[in-house]
Length: 63
Image 1 (cartoon, rainbow, N blue to C red):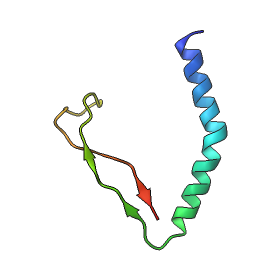
Image 2 (cartoon, helix red, strand yellow):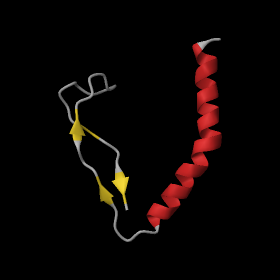
Image 3 (cartoon, helix red, strand yellow):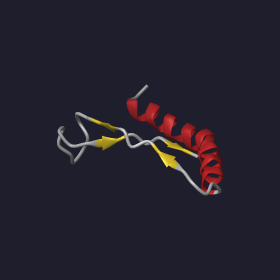
C-alpha cells in the first residue's frame, strides 16, 4: 500500500469523524465570554519557512 493511499485514508477519516467534534468544540468555546490560552513556547527543529532558533507556540486553549 502506498504512503499516498494511507495519507488519503487518514485525511478522509479525520474529516468524517473528527470535523464534527472540532465544530462542536469550537461552537461551545465561542459561547464563552472569556478564553484562556496557553502561550508556552517550544523549539521546532524543522518548521517550514522558520529558523530552528525561532519560537513556536503550543495551541492549547481552555474556556
